[in-house]
Structure formats: structure tokens, C-alpha cells
Length: 605
View 1 (spheres, helix red, strand yellow):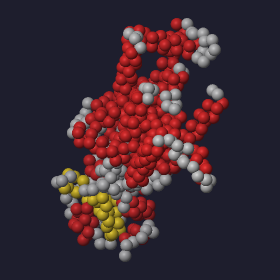
View 2 (cartoon, one colour; view 1 turned 90 degrees about the horizontal axis):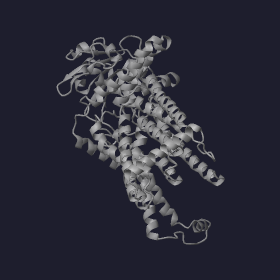
View 3 (tube, helix red, strand yellow; view 1 turned 180 degrees about the vertical axis):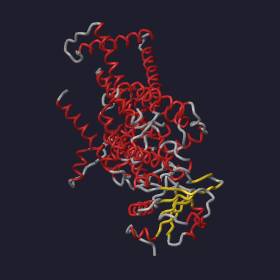
View 4 (cartoon, helix red, strand yellow; view 1 turned 90 degrees about the vertical axis):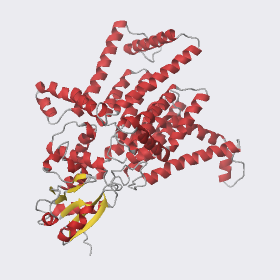
């Protein structure tokens, strides 16, 4: 590589590192400010229970085992706070812009930097990069895996398939829709192969001849790689036997890399530790980690009833999220695809990513089980690549019309016409760039830590509002100084509109999945109570309010509709109401005044 090219590459990589640092900063600031979402509370609670009991088994309803297993270690090191629980997702999401570097053989330097900026600042990726869910993780691991696979093809270096295999496995440990990524890759690849067939026919080559030519190229590359001669001045291909043996050995190594990651994460605990000391148990653990886990995934997500919903409703919700929080990526992806097609480059990689994004947009409303903004993550990521082509094109048009020397002279107090090209074209390009910047910054600022019920384009229904935080802090302070059991009593309710609420006959049922039915209505409160070490109980629905109040602990939590019946019997308690969802599910938290005072918390006058 020429020195001047090396310096240019260094500048591009350095620019990406700066972008990634900014992305990490945006994701870290105020990371623990937003109250936990229902999903975060569920996974967080069971992570704490695993850390305490050492018992963990894969359950596909909470997706992959990656977050519970990794966060249990992170909690040991840093403590179980809201910010720490989201830390791994924030780190992975913040480093996602670096994936652009892996595509440098198919994008120019300007496009690589533009891609990094889009992955760093897109409002969807920022919001869910500050959220303890698996969507950012599966997207990032899948994209990095694709990057290493493409680098393996570009450099003809099979060793890059090892990290690709490990990253695909990691994607599966986060969420089952890693399978959808592979299907989208396969579908986009089929369209790219069709492109190649069309090109071959235009060049006058029969399809059969083209296929034989591609096969010969692959075989020749394998022979050179087996001989370790790629890049040599006079390469000497390996023999057929050595090439086959070399290919089989690497294929086995890549498969073992994938399986090692899968088994490590999906193996039940503590059975895995027992198998490491007693090899006779390994076969059973291996079976449960592979076949057993795959069967559970298929039974719930592929052959179950999780996808029984109205497609158009979910498709409209996804379109609304893309329009409100990812309009820049959506528009510039089309621009990039058109520009790349009509300027004669016709890059297969750009087309591949565009097809992948379109397939995700069409397919996810059918594949997902719930309407939520996080689905857009899996559309934004692939479309960011053709969008980077579009952004780079518009930026070049703008910069090409600026006379840099005249601009420098003007800044020094001289005169000169700054715009040297077509003024209209330069102005339009400038307006597009300003609009793109505003289309990223404004939604990011709007949704950043939002729990606003009007922001349903990104904020999912099961998100409590942030005013709950003060009461949660009071509860944790009370639990810390209260000596008797229980510390917290959930008041069971039986409302015809929502069934039995809060009541669990045996609280120990909540230690494993599935928990008691009424426990799910408490979310995300179990996360906060568990990390505070609270002893929790609940009263049965229909219990007389006077009996509930008799010997009541310092904290009671009830459905808001029951506040009026309970208040006369809870003299000496303050009560606050909060939305436990965006709307329509209010809870009342009763706090004993003496307990607040003992915990050195403000007591309302």
C-alpha cells in the first residue's frame, strides 16, 4: 500500500473511531435516567435470581441467554443499577459504527464515514442502544459477522470466517431472529446471483459458462490459500488432496467455533459446571444446549401462536416509526440505490444491503409478536448502508460547488465568490444536508430518554413514566432500614377488565420462568425490589381492606382503583399514584411516614 494511501486509510479509520467515541458518549450520558421498561424489569429480575441461585435454563420467551449470563457477571463487578444493566447494550451499540470499516472494500472512504455517522446517530439505534433489550445486540453481531465474511471474500483469507462464525453464534445467543438475518442474507444473495446472471448474459456468456467460471475461481482461490501463497509474486497452488484437506479442516474449525459459543451460552447452569468436572455428563449438556434449545425456540417462535396478529396493523406501526425516527435513512437509502445504479457503479454490496433492508421491512411485521418501535432496528441497520451512499453523494455535490480558497479568503476578511458551481444545485445539496442533520438530531433529542405517551413511534406501551423514580427510591431506602418481613405487600385485585392483578399464591414461584400470573402485572417493580433485597408478599383478591391494613408492612402497592377503599385503613401512610404503563394502568404506592423518616427520606407535610 502506498504511503499516501496508508495516510488516507488512517484518516478514515481515525474518523470512524471519533464517531464511535461520540456514539458511546451519547449512549452513556444519563443511561440510568429512564425507569425500566416491563421487558427490562423481567429480564433484570431473573438475572438477579440467577446470580443468587446459580440456576439458569434457556427460555425463549425472554429471548437468548446472552444478557442474563453476561449481566450477572457485570452486576458482580459494578452492582445492579439501571445504568449498569444497560451498559453492555450501550457499549455494543456505541461500537457499531466501527463495523463500517469492514466494508471498506465495497464503499469509498467518504461512504464509510457516512455509514459510521448514520449508525452512531440514528434515533432508533440511539434509543434502543440505551435499553436492556437484545435488538441492538443481534443487529450489531450480525452486521459485524457479515463484515468479516465479506472481508474473507475480498481478501480471500478464510481465517476471517472464524470471527464471523463466532459473531453469528453470539447473534443467536441474543435473540432467535438471528435466523431472520441469515434468511435475509440468503434472499439478498439470491438476488445478487441473479444480477450476476444478467451481467453474464449481457456479456454474451451462457449461464452455464458463467457458473463454471465462478466455480473455477473459487477452486483456484482455495488452492492458493491452501498453499499459503495468496499475494505471492509467483503463487504455487496446492495439490488437489491438500486443498481438500485444508478446506475440510477449516470448515470443521469454523463449525466448532460456532458450536463452542452456542454450547457455552445455551448450556443449563449448574449442569455445565458439573459436566466440566465429569465428562460423562457432556453429551447431555451438549444436547440440551443445541437440540433442546433449538426445539424450544421452534416450538415457541416458529410453530407457536406468537405471530397470530393483523399484519397491516403491525406494518403501519413499523412504517410510522420509520417515518418519524428514521426518515433520513429511509429517504437516503433510495437516493443511494438510485445513484449507485445510474452512475454506472452498480455495486453488488449496495444492492445486497438495499434488498436486505426492504425484505426486513416487509417481513418483520409478520415475524414479530408485538408491535413496538424496536422492530425498526432491523430495518434501519441494513438501509443505513445504501443511505450512506446517498449521503456521501449529496455531500460531494455540495462540496464540489464550494470554492475553498475563496471561503478561506472571505474568512480572513477578503472578498470572493464562495460558490463556484451551479448555485441552485449547491443550495439544494446544502438544504438536503441540513435537513438530514435535523432529521437525525431532532428525533434523537426528542426520544432520547422519553416516556411520553405521545411518542409511541419509539416508546413502547409497557414503559412506565419517569415520575415513578422518586417512589422507587423511597421504597428502596425503606427496605434498607426495615427489619421485619415482609417489606412490601402487593394488594391483590380482581377487576373484570384485566383479570387477577398482583396476587401470587407462592412468591417463590417467581424465581423461575414462568412466574406466577399476577407477578407479570407488577413489572418492572420486581427488578427494583429484588435488587433492594425486599421481602415481598401479596394479599388475595377480595380480601377485606381492613384485613389488608392489619399488620401491614411499610410499603403497600395496589391498583389505583383500590386506593379509595384502602386509604381509610392506612392512617399514617402517604400515597402516590403513577402510570405503570404509558397509559391506562395506574398503581398506588402507600409509604409509611415513620418508615420514611427512619430511612431519612422526605415526609410530606
